[in-house]
Structures are given as C-alpha cells and as structure tokens.
Length: 486
Image 1 (cartoon, rainbow, N blue to C red):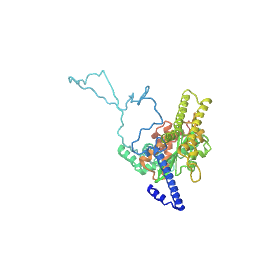
Image 2: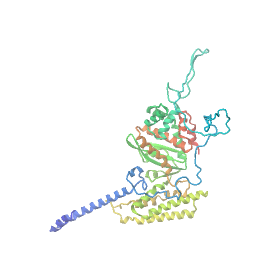
Image 3: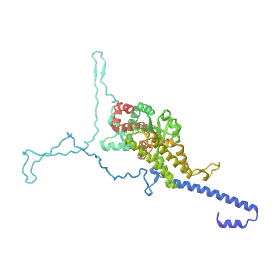
Image 4: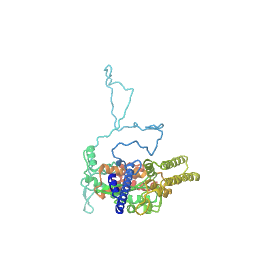
C-alpha cells in the first residue's frame, strides 16, 4: 500500500471500525510480503543450482557465459598431456604384408645411366595401412535334387542353417546395422545412409528393425541368466534416467557391476518399476545408489553415491556460504584418498582408531550444520511445522543416513561413488539426443536388451561388433561366457 494512502486512512481514524480495518489491511500486506519473500528465496535457490552443484544435467545450464567454477576433482598438480613414463601407442610394421609393391630403380637420377641390369645392394621399405575397396559380396547357395534309385522318391540337398529366403542379408550386415544403431547410437536413416555411402548398397529401415527383433529374441535366455547372476553379486550399482518413448516420459533402469550391466525400460520410476526389473526384490548384497527413496524400501544393504553429496555440498557452500558443507566435502575426499593409500599398501581396511576418528569428525560437522540451521528460527507453515531450508534438509539427511554415506570407509569393496552406473547410462542420453525418442515400446525394449549384451561384452574386453556377429551366426558361446565368467 502506498504511503500517501496510509496517511489518508490514519487521518480518518475516528472510530474503532476504521482502526480495525486498517489492522486487517496491514495484516494482509504482511502475508503478501511473507509469500513474496518465500517465492524470491525459492527462485534464488533455483538460479544457484547448475550441473556442477546439483543433479541437473549440463544441458540445463543454457548457453549463457558463466564464471569458472571449481571442479570437484581438484588440481592434480600434473601438466596437461602425456605424463612421464607414458609408453604411448603408434603403428608398428608387420613382418609379412598383405600386398607388396616393388619400386625399381631403372636409371640414375643424376646422369641418367641405365641401371635396369644392375643388382640392387641396398633396400628400404615403408608400409601403408589402409582399407581395401569395400563392396558387398553376394554368395549364392545352390541345392540339387535327385531321384533316389532305392525308393524312387525325388530328394533334395539342404540349404545351410540361416539361409531361409530367396534373397536376404547376411549376419555381418545385420550385425553392422545393430552395431551402428545400438553402440554408435545412430538413427535408422543415418545407418542406411552410411552403409549406402560405404558399400553402394544398404538395407532399408524395415530390414534393420527385423535384425533388431532377431537379436532381441535370440538374447532372451541371456537376459534371464544375466538377471539371476546380478542377484547373486556382492556389490552392484543402481541408477535410472529418463527416456522418451512415444512422446511420453519413460525410465531406463540399470543394475551395473564391473563386468555386467542390465537395462530395463519402464513407464514408472519408483518401486513398481524396480520390482518389474526383478533384481532388487531378491538382492542380498550392497546396493550403491543416490538418495532416491524407492531404493531404501528394499531390505538389502545400502551405500550412498558420495559424488552426488559433493555436488549438494558445493551448492550449500555457494548459495548459503556455510562453512560446514566445505568441511564435510574435504573430510569425504580425505577418507577416499586415505583408502586409496591403504589399498596401494595391500590393506583392505582402516584401523579402529582411524575409523573412529573419521566418524567423530563426521558427526562433529553434522552437529555444527544442525546448530547453524536451528529449527526454532525457521518459519512455520499453516500446521505449525517448521519450514526447513535446504541446508537443514541436507544436514538431517546426512545425520539419518550416516552408515550409508560412510559405507565405503568400512568396506573397501564398496565404491566411493556410483559413477560406474552413470557412465553406463550416459550413452542412452546420447541416443535420445541423436535419434530422438523411441516410436514404440518394442523398440525401447529391443534397445535395452541388446544394449545389455553389448555393455557386458565391452566390459569383459570383447569388441561389440564381434559379439553381435556371433548372435546372428546362431553362436551363443559368448553370451554364456559373459554370464558365467568371474
């Protein structure tokens, strides 16, 4: 309300009714100011968050120029580029080349004397690595029919296994199509265009889709055995990311270890989807994940991803300028560095004195955080409950989930973070950016199962194209190795 209007109302305070009206107006103004302050605070919190201090993706940062932020990794003290002792890698000559071309010396370049009959006493060589001219080859299979003199029946020889149509694409072309689409994340049209430019002939998108369906069906047993194997592991990472399917938001769930990964597409994100994935309901190991509440509904042991916490602590430091957040970040990184030193010495645990010391420091910092953000000084809502700010919420969560945050300190088999799972999921976001959304739920399921097979093969040192080629040759030996190997 404007000051002049307040003066006018004050001059007319001749009755109790006018005074009561003025008090009502002032009360309403106070409520509006409180509401606006709350909205401004929420907007400031949103503006303070970016990909470096929260779980927001880098794409949400926009194109505006920002101040240089401090990396969570810190400075290593090393110069850019290869480090001392780095072996390097370059082309090496082979002992026997595929083709050899002689360049003879027919005449002297100085005096033009004929040297064609002179014996060469010096030789040198160089090798060029290149691709041969690429062209799709057509192999024709012919069978023959004969009249059996024994039974008098007309009999025919048989086509090889897999030769089922009058004309068809072979396993290498099918494997290449799946490789480009599910490993290099290229769309149907761009796969066809690339193969047309490289070979002069290309399958249509429908043929590529049929090849995907063939691989999907062939890998059904592999997926079942992979799920059973992941249920038995000691430590596994769990994560999920959004994926667009038929213009609606779906979720790609993941269970990941150093050697295996299983993807599951689902329209839901929470426990209902995790139950359908079929791992966490039967999992007795240690699940590494972020603080998504659905994970804590399962009876297995839990470990928190501390990189998520480091980002949240960085946000608290930058937005609210509270020193405890930076202290806790430093403590977690010191524990991580100390653990790495212990492992380098061949040890697999801290001493009781060291764990007690780290745990005491952790609790002291959390105590400081709670004292810095007391509930008594916070506003209350309509029900009389305190409205907690972001530092208070994080401090209470860190206090409640202390065993999960420090799990990596007590058990060296537990990783400090869940970056392994995030790396496995990252290519799905590349897929969405390059190719757009999936046009059907079947296509998304094809992607999840085939991607599981490819990631398992890559983690165990096999080439993705070779792994896919075995599937189209009806050779499932590698699929069995990927599941049973340790």
